[in-house]
Amino acid sequence: MYKKILVATDLISSEDNPVLNRANEMSQFYNAELHVIHVVERIYTYGTPPFPQDFVEWQKEFVKVAEAKLQKLCHSLGVLPDNQHVPVGNPKELVIEKANEIGVDLIVLGSHSRKGLSYLLLGSTADGVVHASNRDVLVVRVKP
Image (tube, rainbow, N blue to C red):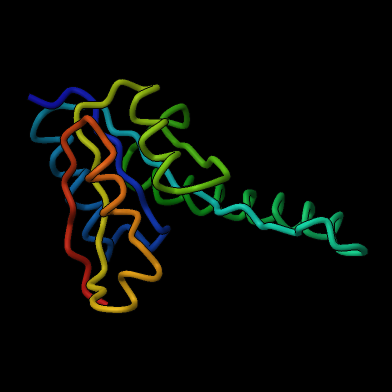
């Protein structure tokens, strides 16, 4: 049924990460190719001197750290380097963009329980992906 699966991660270790574990189980069950993505959110500087160059360097460092953590997680799952993705930007948009680019059949991501005003003000990557994607989406409940 599923040939390619994309899992979005927040870089929690694979041993206790129910989202990565579920995606890995599904990829094994369906003999599907597994891709893993972690989106590093962009730092906005609004052009305020003297910090913009520092922010650029910080952003690069955040990406390096995320790539190293993702590589370690993916190694434990047997995910190939070409199937590891660390873009910078809006998580909802980039998860959907990568899913379309790769041609995945299923997107797997986690959802933390947020209710009421917190949910309305902050939004949710999971909710955004579920409503904007034209692919199957599995949302794994993650306990706080």
